[in-house]
Image 1 (cartoon, rainbow, N blue to C red):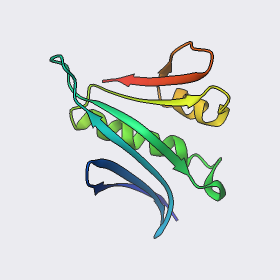
Image 2 (cartoon, helix red, strand yellow; image 1 turned 90 degrees about the horizontal axis):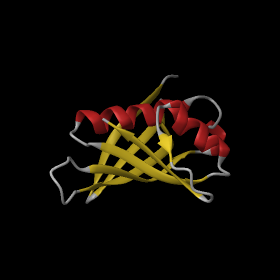
Image 3 (spheres, rainbow, N blue to C red; image 1 turned 90 degrees about the vertical axis):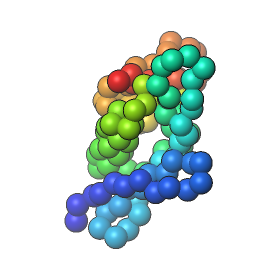
Image 4 (tube, rainbow, N blue to C red; image 1 turned 120 degrees about the vertical axis):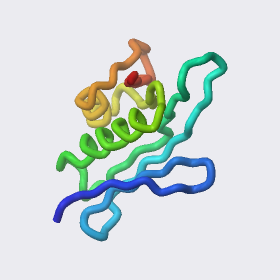
Length: 114
């Protein structure tokens, strides 16, 4: 079976799902954040998850690539998220898809600009 990704609208939350055939294997949700300057809105990824039984199979990287491409195509100026620097698997995924991070000691803020 091949994995697929899609946008699911839920009120003001932007929700994506990752599916393997007909089975949901992960979710990502975030928000469009308007700016006070003339720059385009930012996409804030609040939560992203590939369910444990489907991790370490490349789905997380592909899921993030899909969402990043969607955000760029839909007029966002950047996407960003925060994670713990000790969350090594997540950090690898974000770096693999081209996101860069701040150098703080605790949380990491990952950003990709379009």
